[in-house]
Image (cartoon, rainbow, N blue to C red):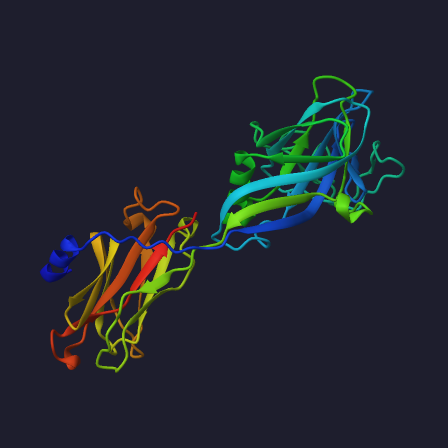
Length: 357
């Protein structure tokens, strides 16, 4: 960056730009659910109307698995504000007991097993069912019988006589954020009741329950990806058009990279990308400087014959200690334009980018 640009940048006044985005709420139905029965590894309930937690009168444990398709329900790059799981408890002989949600660490199946009656005894496991010993019956075992999950619960809720119960916590919001950022890590939650004594079992309505209003739902409040916004006036160059700067992907820290494109440039010209903490509109060269404050260079690219220069801004090369979710940074590109006369160089407009998770 030349001396004149650095001088103007240091003298510019603070004027941060925040780009607003409307909050969103989505109610996500369960994608699959199942019950694990501790008696043996051949019982399951993948297609029934209910799933179970806790301990029966005979001392048998029940654990439930449930998964929601987060990635196809919430825009990528969104920031999760809160998450709440709503279940309908439809039968119990127990008084109030704590029921915990733990994040599952391995994939599991939902097969065609469908018990009769009240379903508490389970049914013969079918291919692909999750059982106490198998993630996918009959051939893919859990590392630990009863399920592989994070020991620390993401949420705890006291379930009494029902019918409606809601779990919500920061831990759940963090789980959902992680599943949104890395969909391949989404194995859902395992629902575990009080296993320290007998007669603590709770029956909940499953995703295939005949009453739609009773089916599990995950309610997520989120902030959509903040849309990069142009600001500051760019002046026409020798092509007759002003240079334009845009982002080619969502400004999410989880992406690991921000892809920038400067367009409407003179063909094959050298183009230098830079960014800073503040915005300004100060005459410089044949155009305006739009970035000020603490400034950083991203490097130089050569425009294509069509007048487009791109640059990948690797977050590892940026000041990551200050680029945090919710922080706004201002980007611009400067390019040579000898054919236009004057100072022989110009700038694109500015691009304000607010980073999400």
